Structure formats: structure tokens, C-alpha cells
Length: 443
Image (tube, rainbow, N blue to C red; front, side, top):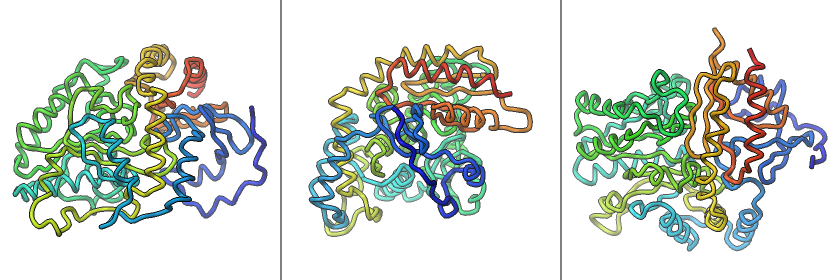
């Protein structure tokens, strides 16, 4: 059912929008007014099928009353409490519950407010760990080409998206470097799930170790499945190989699971999906179903305990945020985790993955489509770029789809899909049917 139009539009001048072509948007705005289940409603009352879980975050769908009611109750009881030299019970309960969702090895939890903060926190933990162990010379942080780890200066430094870095190059961490990405369309185009070829790309870390010396490297951070660059799935045995190299040289391995966490891959985390255990794992987004900003960094106990030495009255880690573990965010996180558990949404995603894969790859052969990638309930459809105008073809499809009632995400000339885990098969059919119509219509 369509909602009633909201009436007059607000003025658009004052809000400087993030990651947006502001002038283009404000000339023809796309405005959302409400959401429920699998659908947004725009300001004109039209329903829009959510093919992106908002921004990779609303894994349980929209309008979950259990979450909003839990937040409301918490705000009435305790609106804010500091977690600097103080505490409130809900933060400790949330950490305990979350440590039971992930593998038990990652049982220490540091709260943040976003994926960007989680990435910067993870890098600082790695640096602090080596200093506490007497390896203060390990200051170099390694990312990967085409990686995305948020917009803090640490995350940009290890990130590998050129457009995100070039304005800030002079201010990035001087000890950062990058291993090569794993995108190999010549060998792996239209792979279903993990590509067969490319495990050897992990060996590029040995090149950087030879160049800089293992004794200078603190950590390596990668997205198990790279999302913002256009859904790059790790080749078979790639993550295992990267783990082995890190172990060999005493380097901490960090998984950025801001996108892949909380059921997106048909498992609680990529840790379980791929059977590889990092030393540190970053999360956000699906942690609270996108309702309230919150992130969490999961850490191996040995990494945590290395810093719990010396005088007990001295702060062990000089880092934190005003809203780390805020009461309302914790209430949202606990209610979200209960939905995941009660409705078995992680298991549901695993059961749905074969159907998702089949329907997604049915678009092979569609005009302009040069590759399709998938893992869990994530899909990437790469298009042939228009000569002299990279990204324009995908953007025009994005606009067409929205006007027709489907929200997709585009990055360059790749369409990224990541619907809520409550998606039904007929809704998957509708998404793919619309894309089958729109993709060849844009030359």
C-alpha cells in the first residue's frame, strides 16, 4: 500500500550530503519518508523495494518494533552514562552476548560508533599490542588495493580506493602500504561463490615483508569480501594463505567485517564462512540493524591481555569515544541480536544462497554485463564501462531502478546488491527481472 505524500519538500541547500554528487542530487532529489519490512516509501508515497539493506546495514529488514521499543524503554530509564572510568550494566551485557555470537576466540569487545571508528580502533589496538610486547618498531600498517576501511585517517591510509585517498594523501599514515587486490576477471569471470584462481595473490604480502622487514609491520587489514569496491569475493584458500603468512612473521591479521558481519554471508561472520580466524575483527552496520550508530571491535584474548600489564591503576589503552557502549545503542544491539537468533536469519540466508546465486547468474548474457560475483546474500554485477564515461552507465540504471521502485547501489560500473535477510524468493525474482530490463536499456 502506498503512503500519503508528505507535502512540501524541505529546503535542500543546508545539508552537505556524504559521498554524494550534491548538485546532481539536489537538481532531482530521491527522498525516502518511511520504511517497513522489505520496502521504503518515498515522499510521493511510492514503495521502493530495498535491494541494499539501506547501506548494507538493515539485515533484519525495516521497522522492527522490537528494536525501537527497546531503545525507547532504555532512553526513559537511562539516557546516557559515561564509560570512561564508569560503567552501566547494559554495555557489559551487550559485550557478553556479542562474544557468544562470534567464535569464542574473539572474546574481548571494544565499542565504537561506526565502521570507520572500528577500523581506526583496530589499527590502534595492533600498534599498542606490539608496543606492549616490546616490539615498538612494528609501526607499519598494511591494507589492500581496492580496500575500504572507512573515512578516518587510519582507515583511508590502509584503504585502497583512489578517489577516497587522493585529496588527503599528504596527511595519511606514513607507514602504510598495500598488497595487490584479488580481482582477476580473465580467469575468474562469472565465478559462483569463491573463485578458483588467485590464492597466490596473498603471497604479495611476502613482497612487502621483504621490502620493509617483518619487524616493522604491525598488522594487515582486509575485508574478507570487499564490498564498496564492487563485491570482490576471496579466491579459494586466499585467506588461509594470508593467515599463514601473518603467523609466520608475527603480524596481526585484521578482518574488516563491517559489511560481511551479522549473517550477510549466510554465517554469523566471514570467520565462520571461510574458516579463518583473525586476531582482530571490526563490525558495525548490522550490529544494530542500522537503527542507531554503533560498532564493535572483537579481539583475541591474548591481544587484549598483552596490554593488561603493569600498574593496575594506570589506563592501559588511551583510546575511546564519548558514546562507546551508549545505553540506547546497546539496547538496539541486544534487540537486534535477539531477532537474528529467534528468526534464525543467519541460517535463513544460508538456505537462500543457492536460489540467490541462481537468479543472479541468470543475468549472464545480458547486454553490457561483463562479470557477476556472489557470496552469501551479496551480489555484484559488473558492467562494461561507457567509453570516456566510467560509472555513468551504472548510475543511469540506479536512477531508472529507483524511479521504478527498486533501490540498488552502484560503485563505478558495478551494481551491488545486498537485500535484507528477510527477502522472499518472489522479491529476488522482481529485483532480477527489473535489472534484466534496465541494464540493456542504457547504452
